[in-house]
Length: 414
Image 1 (cartoon, rainbow, N blue to C red):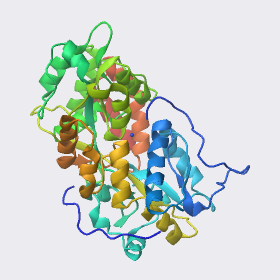
Image 2 (image 1 turned 135 degrees about the vertical axis):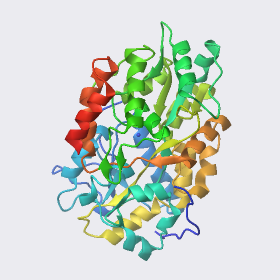
Image 3 (image 1 turned 90 degrees about the horizontal axis):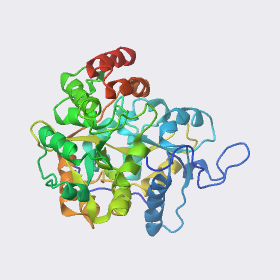
């Protein structure tokens, strides 16, 4: 496998259908260790066939350049990954490669090997990758993961429902007032206008970021940021007051919300570009994508990104990096962007992502990606998410305010 050198830097800046553990592609021995060498085994989230297809797309694209390239996949569901990875990667002989999100690199930093020197030795120019995602994957001054995407959360919608309701589809601007009017008009006896989830990183937070808020500033938790509080209260009210959305359960509601959009049971749902192809397969030409609504209506994205890292206890980091480098080339990232819909972490591959997509949909996501803020978290983020998910259903039912819930979670996570 050969390394590559990027010529110029980037100037700027995740579950569906099934749940539970999905068996890895490779067989496992009785003691649970992978049959393939650690340096060609990737520990990652595999919640469903959509996840599996994405990882297989990386492998297939790498095999175009090197037919002998091999990569074995192993891992639990996305929801279980963040706890199980810490156990799985804590002993020798475990997979040498693992995935992380920029938002979780701080949390997983002890598991992730610094990559700066390995990248330099292999001729991989880290400056070519999306700057906010690299910043999110930098811990104590060293890069712990190389991002393959830089994904803005966006509002996916069913164009047919807008037509049936006599509503104009969202354009390049989208205000909160118009969004609420649309949600009310789109809510009928058969469907809700919006699908909501109980997770903190959802519609409320995306609106909060669009309004200039943030959950973390200067490495400190800031859940009581007024813009964030107001935005999450707005989403609570969509269910509790306006009744344009069903109150989500405390358990993970992403698969149900995603399925509801694909089945036509809701008109709108916030999600990431990694779900684009799954939604397109279900809705066809009726798939629409809008920017996240805000008071001013301008595009401002909440960026999330995932990437590949090397285990801090890897026995042969150089061999592991040789495998890693084969799945983060421009050609591979561009091909996965084209076939799976993940918005690429390399600026030169964005046109590959737009291929075959509705131009208006592509413009909305591109606008959010080019003007956005990365989701940065703290080492206690997993506990923060668990606490919010526990209390949020009370907010969606109107029993507690966003200010009350966020203040309580802030104390736990600080």
